[in-house]
Amino acid sequence: MAFRKDLVQISSWIMPNTKVLDLGCGSGELLRILQQEKNIEGYGIDNDINNIKMSLKNNINILQFDLDNGLKDFESNSFDYVVLAQSLQVIKNPQELIKEMRRIGKEIIVSFPNMGHWSSRLQLLFRGMMPITQSLPFKWHDTPNIHLCTIEDFLIFCKENNLNIEEVLVTNHKQQASLFTKIAPNFFGQIATFRIR
Image 1 (spheres, rainbow, N blue to C red):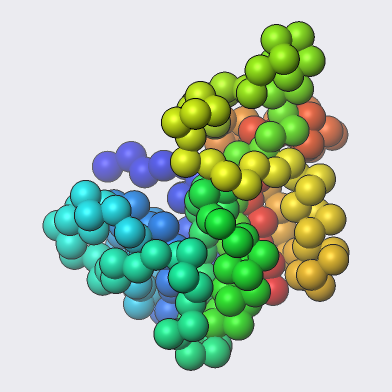
Image 2: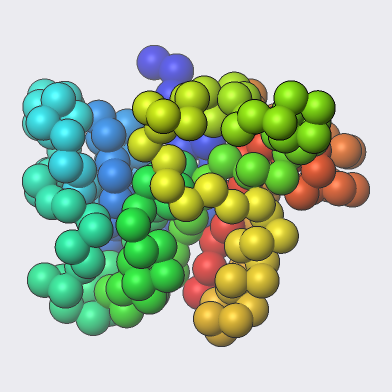
């Protein structure tokens, strides 16, 4: 079975026999990879009933939970990894959620679509309209995204919040890195993935 490439990349950063919490886990695809290949103890959180049904069907331990209510029910340092894969932009208070992720996880992994990509910039410049891209496919009035950011925004956020970045992967929408995404990540990158201690 073919898995989402970004989730395969995230799974490569996670050590075997560890405890993982996947926030906004969808159908539980990341946890399935990790259970099959890394023998992890995994739990997912999602608020969408269809995602919860799919996760249960895939034998994923899942909790129905609204991430905007925080993670106060979890004990400090209760997970080796806490993952938020391409859901940062839909969170009402991302700063508070990341603070809580740090509290409960020894390491956190965050990925998000980059609003600084050249195609977004050109759409704003020449069309004067909110960008629609392969990574951000919604119109302004029906988007679930409420906190869009660029890679540069997130780097500044990490510095201001004393987040120690261990590794960064910047790719295009097909999850492929290139010379361009390495030279000018904020301009050519469409998806950014950060591993943070």
